[in-house]
Amino acid sequence: MSDEIKDTSIDTFLEELASSSATPGGGSAAAIMGAMGAALISMVCNLTIGKKKYVEVEDEMKSVLEKSESLRVALTGMIADDVQAFDQVMGAYGMPKETDEEKEARSEAIQAALKTATDVPLQCCKVSREVIDLAKIVSDKGNLNVISDAGVAVLAGQAALRSAALNVLTNAKMINDKDFAQAKLKELEGLLSGAGSATEEAYGVVEGKLS
Ligand SMILES: Nc1nc(=O)c2c([nH]1)NC[C@@H]1CN(c3ccc(C(=O)N[C@@H](CCC(=O)O)C(=O)O)cc3)C=[N+]21
Image (cartoon, rainbow, N blue to C red; front, side):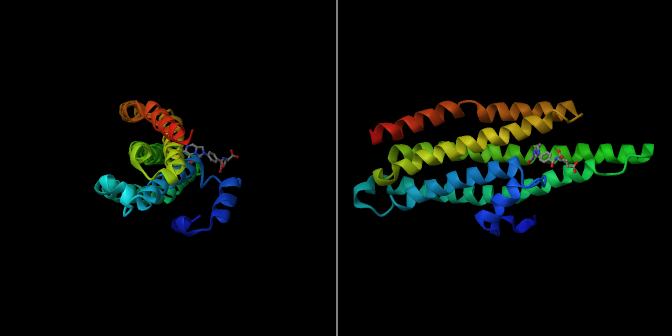
C-alpha cells in the first residue's frame, strides 16, 4: 500500500491488514488504535466545550482538544510510517545473498531497517502514552453523556501502547547493536511504567459514573 493509506476506506484497510502481504501489519494497527483513542478524546472535548454545565472545565477541555488533535494527526501519520518502515525490513531480507559482498550489504540493510522499524513503534508508544494521560482527564471532567467514549479512548490508547511495544520488542531482539537496542528498551520501559494503572484508574472512573 502507498503513503495514501490513511485515505483508504476502512474496508480496504482491513482487507489489506487481513491479507498475506507483510504490510500494513501490527505496527500500523497499533497506530490506528491510538488515533481512534485521540479522536474520541477530541469528541468528548468537542461535546463538553460550550456547554453551560461544563463552563468550569471549558478552558481545560480546549487545551486537551488542542493536544488530542495533534496526537491524532501524529498517530495517523504513523500508520503509513510503519508500512514504510516494515517494507524496508522485508525489502532488506529480500536482497541477494550469494557473495560475501552481497551478504554484507544485505546484513547492513537489515540492521538499518530494523532500527527504523523499532523507532517508529517506539514513537507510537510515546504518543499513545499521551493519549492515555489525556483520556484520563476527559474521563474525570468530560460531558457525562459521552463518558463511555472517554473509557473507549483510554482503552484504545492502552491497546495502541502495548501493541506498539510488542513491535519494539520483536525488532529490538534482532538488532546487533546492543547499545542501541538497550537504549530503546529502556525508553520503552519508561513509557509502559504506570500506563496500566492510569488506564485502570480512568476506566474505573468511567464505570463508576455509569453505575
Ligand atoms: N514496525 C513494525 N511493524 C510491523 O508491522 C512489524 C514489525 N515491526 N515487526 C515484526 C512484525 C511481524 N510482521 C510481519 C508481517 C508479515 C510477514 C510476512 O508476510 N511473512 C512472510 C514472508 C514474506 C517474505 O519473506 O517475503 C511469511 O511468513 O510467509 C512477516 C512479519 C510485521 N511486524
